[in-house]
Length: 83
Length: 267
Image (cartoon, rainbow over all chains, first blue to last red; front, side):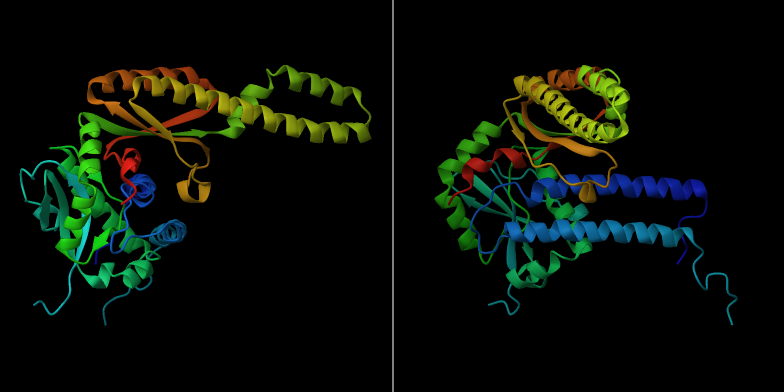
């Protein structure tokens, strides 16, 4: 697969986009997870589960950071000649 | 009978049928369950995703949560363009249509009342962040209590100065907190005047917001569509008023009225 990030400019706009996406994800989580009509449906996620998601979000955010670092570095094996 | 049991995911309740069932762009096949003037907008989901045990397991998988919660939001937002919606919390799942109908039946009057109330109104979000460093610099150089404390520190011997400095830090913290609550209260109250309803939500920690500034206000407003311009004007005024005080305004919306449908929380 092609690495979509070719130049510094591309990388910058990619990071900006990721950041923007993260912000809207946070906004959605802040609403759809904790608010909205809550009923005792057959299955409905509880408050304790919501904390789990926030925890998950933190893990995701740190993994995105790591991913961005990795993307900045050349991919191992990417420059190798096919044998 | 179907061999693989399907579950039904509930997005929102409306008072009118959908003008279009075409949700193909979102990859969802939406269906309606009707009961006396209310419609439940549902779609079939797989137990792999939404059975109680699997749902709990998936909640730790952020890419699963992101994909599904964005879909939840997109479906509701698409319907919201055409009509008033009563959005449900993410992850409201039923085993059969009869149970969805039971819900509509049990809450018929309440759903209708809230939908009538929400008609012609929209939810907007406002999060205010504050750069406390910036705040410290601009505020402390002008504050009388701090200037007086600084003078005392200069006049004191080294031992006493140490304690006075500690005390100063506390004073600074107090003043910052005082000022922040004064500013955010002012913002909230001014916006509340143009809103039908307003709500203050929990502050989210930095680990989740990923901002270097602290969140100091997390509010939601329900605004009559006729007064949206007015609301936006107040926001602009507040931005201008607090621009040099380190406050950063993050306005979002229109949102489905997640924050203003609590009246129907009991069944």
